[in-house]
Image (cartoon, rainbow, N blue to C red):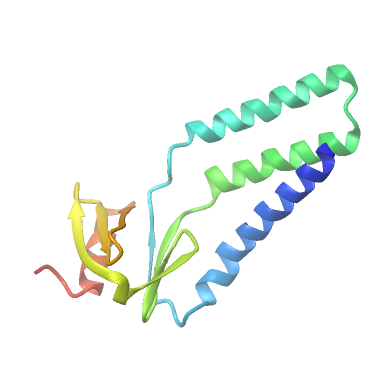
Length: 151
């Protein structure tokens, strides 16, 4: 049962990584502007790696199956990729944008503001608010110019 849960989790995580890195840039037209975003806090990733490491250590003492050990090792590799190697991006398209692999149409935007010089705040028509932390300061100007400049 544990192996099945690990296999399903690894498959879903790997599928999402392929979807986000390969398929999303090709969806909904040509990418007009790709902006690198600030990565989120890494402490959660270190905690997850530590917990998987403790599970491996405990399993080695109690006689873990080699296949389960392999699956746990693959889990650590996917956590390292997802947290430390993957670069989150904002993909601005012709009629909308992709943020975290979700597409949002420009017509749903009611207002765009800047906060703390490098955080873009997008208010949607349904009342939700998106905070987009942009990594490089010069990219903020590109995004502002893309949306029509300062008003």
